[in-house]
Image 1 (spheres, rainbow, N blue to C red):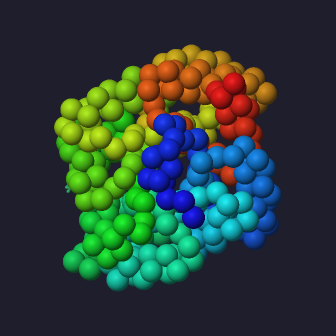
Image 2: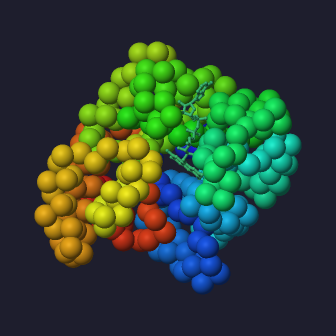
Length: 290
Ligand SMILES: Cc1cc2nc3c(=O)[nH]c(=O)nc-3n(C[C@H](O)[C@H](O)[C@H](O)COP(=O)(O)OP(=O)(O)OC[C@H]3O[C@@H](n4cnc5c(N)ncnc54)[C@H](O)[C@@H]3O)c2cc1C
């Protein structure tokens, strides 16, 4: 299966989706149907989260394998270090290599709800940069490695310059590309790219796009992940917060405008947080590509 850095050699832009492993068997079956529908849109790759929101960890790799085997689309397996020893992580990587996975998104992750005080010890990877280094030293060039980037800085490191230096370390340790946290003010993304280029990071910075479908849950989610809800978003969505239909339509319009501006400004593609649904990402992608 193609590696993401090989796709970059022949394509200036990539369009991709992120999914998560559902908690129930029924949800899993539904996701397989959604993947059938998403595959028709011919994404360059589809990634699947690991452990986020308490989803089953093993299912991540089943989903990635399914995407590759059934649809011949490169799958990207997210992998987080929290609550795993170094040895466990290396065993997982050996296993997913055996299963034909050649693309990982190397993450630190956050301590889970049922173990909120977990801290890395000597047997654990503390930062994603350490994971990148271990992947390269144990597996050479087998994996194409993506990492997470935070245009507004990370919750634990709001100093944007410092956070950019930590991002640089991930790239120096082997990461091929960056997928960003969601954001709503494109200036944050363009400033982030400038900040990284200035310190010598030349890897692709692919913007992560979250289409707005429910304003109240967006507010809750942004409080958790530290993304700012811009005044523009507040002004559009607060007055229609109780109107599902208007919110959905405004969500598509906003995302289309945001994506077009990003591409015009030189973004090397778009990575959609699809939330295991075909809509609205299908409508957004169609408009953006037309
Ligand atoms: C595109 C994307 C996909 C994601 N997918 C998942 C997923 O599948 N599962 C999941 O659980 N979570 C996921 N997350 C969330 C992510 O795991 C959390 O945001 C986590 O808190 C940070 O992970 P990281 O890999 O960026 O960590 P790191 O790069 O390790 O950074 C973590 C923090 O430490 C700081 N830091 C880094 N290096 C150093 C250093 N050497 N010294 C001091 N401080 C340092 C950074 O500035 C940052 O504040 C995703 C996030 C994004 C943007």
